[in-house]
Image 1 (spheres, one colour):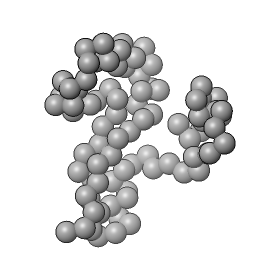
Image 2: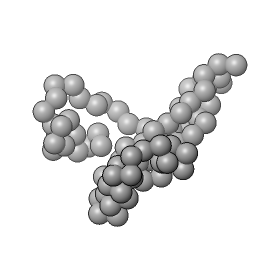
Image 3: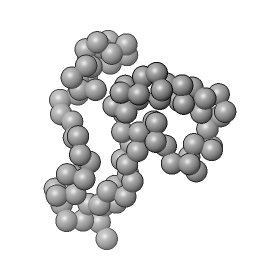
Length: 85
């Protein structure tokens, strides 16, 4: 995503630029001892409980895009971290 942001249909028009990426979200755990990666997924791998909450049309679209544009869909990653305690 960072490498192709200039050609992205939306990001390419924005003045803000992404400057770094983290290919392995677990690496962030090393920054502080109280940070823990709890979950990580892409649009293609949404947790079943979340996927069920999406409208049927959205689920179908994500399924289609996951087959046709899998690489693009996996460029977006959602990470849930716990901090502290």
